[in-house]
Image (cartoon, rainbow, N blue to C red):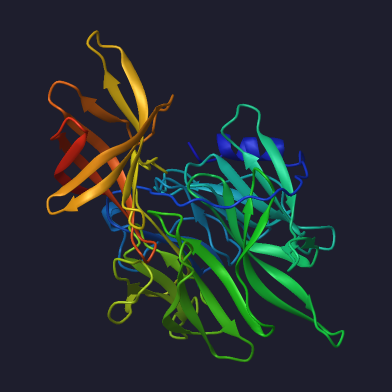
Length: 457
């Protein structure tokens, strides 16, 4: 499917020259909940082929019988940069050594299929659902352009948009001081591109300095947000989003002249940032594993042909705090990314949300059938009245026309039972947990008692 003359490479080639500039309008990113793909973690990385003297894309997937050191996946040599993988683990996209976009099936069923535009691209990324492809073009001077082009591959006729990269100024305006972007990530809902970019700063004495910073671009509006920035002389780069939520990010921090870099995790809701490990080498490329229980990162390893190896740092349930020491994940590999082969569900809308501050349960959509079986959908708010057992009282209700992707709640008039498929609860650290909730009507003033509270993905 993704081999020579694949649909993806043909569509990308057809759309390559069609671009559109998008204007900037303000907006802000929402939180999200994404069920993890089941199965073990597998890894793609860049490794050195000593026989041919080139870098190639390598894979280690034990369920497919790969040895501990992995296998060569790509047939030809590639650029030393991070590949990007679809959410179901079936498709990878990367830039080859002649700066062309290439697709490859991760099960090695066919060789890579490239777009056929050598010398035109410096970086590429694919969305988790495989519908969106983002890339940074190379200009006539062989330097990356200060823009990101996004192709929508889900349409029969591919559409494209090019976003000029700008940095938000202190007064909420924007200034064109971004040289180019490199590593890119799509949020699971397809709304944002998270990327690092080389940014030029003008100092008070007139001098100019460059550093890497991390930004978020909302594609619908074109508004740019600063996610991580630092003082001149410090580079913040190589961002990677968590897999079960768009709320967490890992990246590296490097100081000018240092022989090591810091692996950092952050909660994008709360703004909490933590250093979880120091990695040997002037840079590192960290990523979350499949269920966000660990960060995989590369660090300098002169004993290997590639010059790097991958390590695994375990995390606590908050997805940002290191637990224990780092262990070797893959000997001889760089620019590693992890994936799980299986069904990718994507962002799932919650049926309800419990606010710990106001102690209010908002049910976005609850279906109620009348005596003749006709269903009316309501939005309902319930306030906490007791904690042991958990009891809530209906406070407001209104008719809505809504169907949640995570399922609507159902109220059975005969039994008084309410079933809520997905209730999100966000704690004081901005960590979101999801529960399936059942409760029964216990009074004629619409008091309900929770009878079942089941933690789910």
